[in-house]
Picture 1 (cartoon, rainbow, N blue to C red):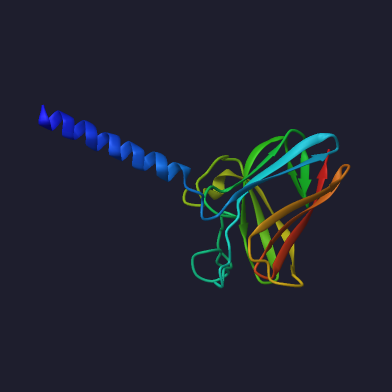
Picture 2 (picture 1 turned 180 degrees about the vertical axis):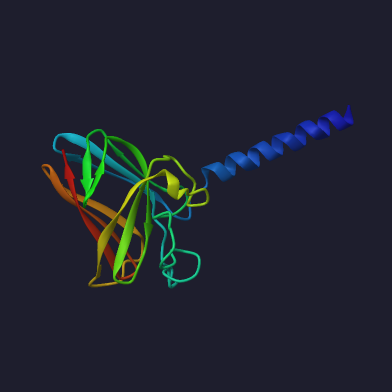
Length: 175
């Protein structure tokens, strides 16, 4: 009987610890960007890591020349109920994962057909819908927290990703 009580008490404490951990705030808050383009909703969900004085473009955070999850935690997700053009890439209505390959003079935006991935751990290039180049510019001031903005006006817009003194952008058009 003592062993059964000990096991029950232990499991209860373990469950309580998991519940407390699940309610703890994330180190990188998550955000949802929602806009209407050509009368249809477009949504981007992503994690917003902080630079915290680190060189984010070297090492393991968002290294130049390597596939990056484009945020923190889960990979960034794009959901659109209408077809889009991201630069020259046609993106049919649906749910996709966005990855990027940061570079000093340009970034590569990757639209992957496997939605809801954790980071870039299981990224599979064979599942890419396509890749397209993004323009890169220096920001007027350093951007402490990674930020995605989708400016939209009717059927046209611009997708911008800013962090640590860099802004990558690409035109977006809804059909």
